[in-house]
Amino acid sequence: MQEEPPPELEWQGHVPVSARFGDSYFSAADGLAESRHVFLAGNDLPGRFRPGFHIAELGFGTGLNALAALQAWRLSAIEGRLRYTAFEAFPMTAADMARALAAWPELAPLADPLLRAWKKGARRIALDGLELTVIVGDARATLPETAITADAWFLDGFAPARNPELWEPGLLRAVAERTAPGGTLATYSAAGNVRRALAGAGLVVTRAPGFGRKRHMTRAARPA
Image (cartoon, rainbow, N blue to C red):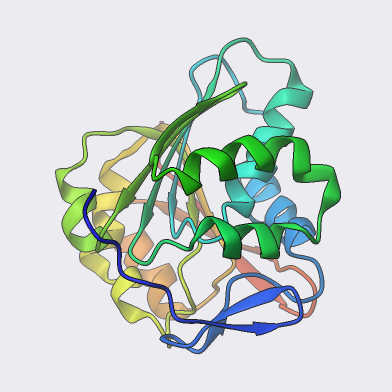
């Protein structure tokens, strides 16, 4: 297996912080509530779920967003598996993921089989209700080579000011091109350059209330 670059973590309680980018992986207030507000509600999920639904994510991190989506998928009782493709440059170890996810015992039945597979080095993982593929590497190189069409995107890279590479117009254009007609996108970021890049890629961009102390977040959709 190809060696994967370490994420260089620091910890603030149960919240992992990237020493490389100087930013946390999720809200210290409640990362799961943040995921549900920004990425699920921001993409009108679970209401849009249907058989074969495909979510793609920039920034897999702890796996929290994938688990939140899987939990919602199972509760929706849709047949088959949710398809989930994530792009991650610096994958965490299973031990670090487990440390972060331990804050939400309700996710343990979903997280435990994921963590067991992850610890063995699997990056294509089939679970009850989930078909997960994590593509390791710089998304600017890996995404253009990946033939996917996502129904919803979670843009969860570190803050644009700290991790500008994951918010470049060219990469966001590749995201738009891999969004199904009528598909959606959500991100916690309300940065003007991100909104302009998404609009320049042909998406219809709107501003929505953010999570916690963040006033705004961004939603976008590809015209049907």
